[in-house]
Length: 165
Image (tube, rainbow, N blue to C red; front, side, top):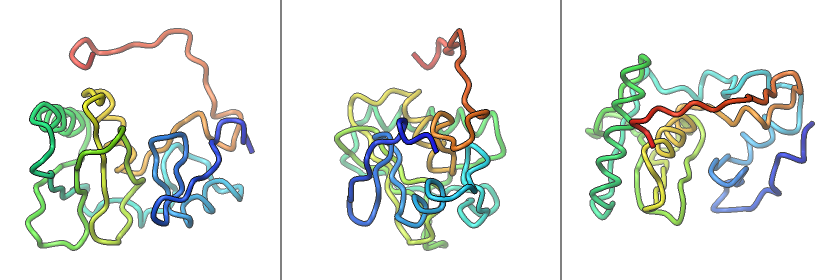
């Protein structure tokens, strides 16, 4: 296991914080980092996926208007390049993502099936950060924390879309 990439877990209301922005439940942490089951860059268990690729969400009315626009743009970007749809929560399902203000950019990983789960944004979060956090919400993890060394890549160049910087 590549422990040198993992920050020590810190309890935050029954969640372990890993690498600063991913909030894993204790069960997720156990599943991913204490056995040999982490073979992909997302959670391998399908029950963490959002039904019909639809992610219901609510936005805190106190969220900064600029962040609301960045969030809308980030959701649209993901929807344009995938089958994922983000829809305002209408109360028809118990599980949804609540987007609110935080001290950084953080997300819980995958669908937790615990009702409301949070995605926190601060004014330092740009569109790219928000896409990153939404991918965590969809169940994706950081590639560089894989327990399989062959899964780690060191790109020589990074490419950023001008529209996201």
